[in-house]
Length: 592
Image (cartoon, rainbow, N blue to C red):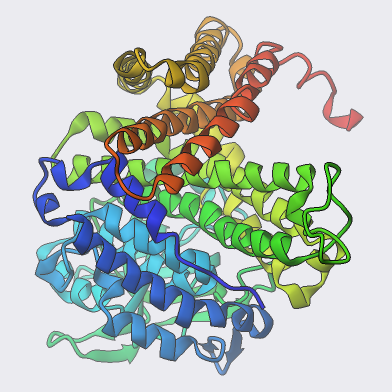
């Protein structure tokens, strides 16, 4: 039986020592003092560890079942979902106009990490609802907002996103779902969608599907796609539920992981829907939900890995195996605990140094979203747009690696289902695939994001690194352990970007063949920047004589490990990028 403990202390460090959230000149941020955020995070952590975590293995074992056209979630999910609603956790950062609590997105993300870490499959029901809420809030009419958002904020109604079809995954221009306009302004939606997470459930009264479809006159490709609101039950003028819409769950997918979430085949047989946003410009509206979901999936990648790490540490402290090379660490026992051995320490330090850096990057990304949305800051908007494929792709790739490493600490016991470690591995694996497979994230980063705004966001990122280094260069300890490694890694990232500029136009494959390496190179540099900021904050706290010196000293030691052992990987990624397309494209299709 696995356990989960919310990393509240580390979150508080990020919010107040690193981001200095209560000092930000953004509406509502001055109220976010340490005591307030401590109370919120502790309460979220309590429900995560005491309510959601115990259901994680249950959901994995039982899965969802489809009976008479209705999806039934695992035992205990409905009661837990009701607790989440009653506690206001589904509405934390939603608009007060629709019943939300109006907190910044970064607070919602912090709570979301705890919920995903303790029970990822369960949390997807409310997470997808939040994404649908955001899309309707950004692109819906006043009537649509009034009709759907209050019930979605409270999660009395849940939400989904319907993109993929059997023949059209990443290439949405191939989709065939049709939308036929009706005299009353509605559309009849006909087609089949697959891989629809939370496509149906017994947790809510209604399910609000956001469905991509092609209406007449839209033309070929993605330019002809529109987005529609298609509720499971039609909504009457007084807000009550009417008749069942002409849509159904055709099947539940049997999956490798996230068994507690219903992954549905959805059939639309002339279902009634309403246009969301502009006709033939559905991708613009859907990207509001997709971009939020990509940040959320990046969070899932490291949040579940955090849970795996916590259980690996506990096992390494308790499991007796062999003797330490430098002398007995447990003289009174028959053997020493695993954690006495250097290779186990390496394994755990790999995990810890990534996880704390990943959390910092996710929190900073959420703060950039707050600056962009609340503060109308275009620079922050452009920067988070650049970072989104890195957060999604790098954090999920490495998060899966961490889950595997945590399983490895258990040895043979990690391969036994009873221990629960395999669930972490299986659940994190999907994060590398859905919401745009990570290879697509890399292509998006190199093919679109680097050149966006004439390259201003990436140049702004480089300048941010230079300014950060300059601000702390007089601290000799930081310089040797943190600043110099970041400077070298940043130069590798700049050299890689320059390689794409020099060769990409003449031979696009030269850039695209190196896109995956570039995403990881960028990820390492981003985490390096986070570690410099965390190290500077820890040094300042120690210099000020702030309590909990052990926490700050541990933070510095963990950061030194990442900078010394992981950040040098940027040189390897650069070397691979510089080989261009020839080694990658050397074989014909028939030679594979």
